[in-house]
Length: 286
Ligand SMILES: NC(=O)c1ccc[n+]([C@@H]2O[C@H](COP(=O)([O-])OP(=O)(O)OC[C@H]3O[C@@H](n4cnc5c(N)ncnc54)[C@H](OP(=O)(O)O)[C@@H]3O)[C@@H](O)[C@H]2O)c1
Image 1 (cartoon, rainbow, N blue to C red):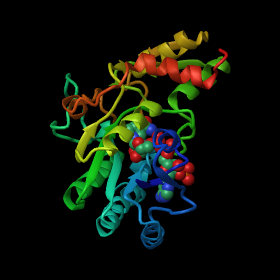
Image 2 (image 1 turned 45 degrees about the horizontal axis):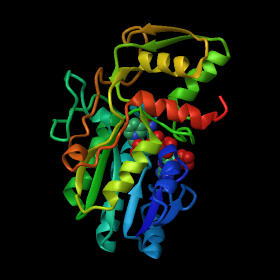
Image 3 (image 1 turned 180 degrees about the vertical axis):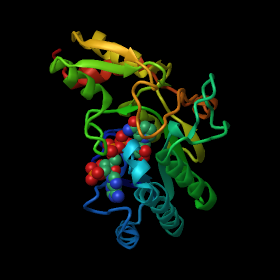
């Protein structure tokens, strides 16, 4: 299959390239096609005529989205509609990535693909709008919600990732406070990329949740990072009330990979095993 990979330099985009080896993957960066330039994006994709358009782009600086809703909706919703229409016109499959933040966190049980979204902030609302536009307009699509991504390329949009931020702070001997009342499933982009490759080889279109298994608070995740990497850190838990941010975040956004399980395609490892693999990949000798 010919796959146009948009957002190729991002942390997920980076790990998708080896996961999709065997296919004709054309990596596209913002320089090749800024998705908010609808005409140019259409021109580039029409010239390529791919079988799959795989979109990993997002404007996902969650707090900044509160002040820049136009940009958030431009990248996360309207550009996604443009990609959907292009995919339809080229008879291509669209694979688009969404987020656990579409949920409000009032549940105490993992959210499945059947759970009702109820976003709490501008970023999440723009991403849910993108989802709705795909579901309303796309002829053939995969919509993949994931959570707490980290990968070796670091998040291009956020400047690093949580794991690297924690390690850098510890190395600078900073006192580190991390919220202990937001429960998530940190997900390694290598594992997500592998599962995306698996569903792309099927025609089981539709909505998927894809995260590593298990769950933890951000504080517990930070603790595990230091335990596994053997770094001494001055780490302590805090609360969302004390660590106020412009965007409200869900207190619980654990996703159940229900659809993958139903199809017998769920090979996600526990988040702790995935973290170990990531840390090993980052420093093989360590
Ligand atoms: N990171 C998370 O924790 C998380 C959690 C849940 C869901 N997600 C979703 O997962 C997807 C991948 O996230 P990620 O962590 O891999 O992000 P990332 O590392 O920031 O990668 C996103 C890529 O998209 C590119 N991009 C952004 N705006 C663009 C535009 N207008 N035109 C063309 N390219 C553009 C960026 O290019 P530049 O480098 O030029 O900016 C970057 O290479 C996103 O859809 C995100 O919403 C992420």
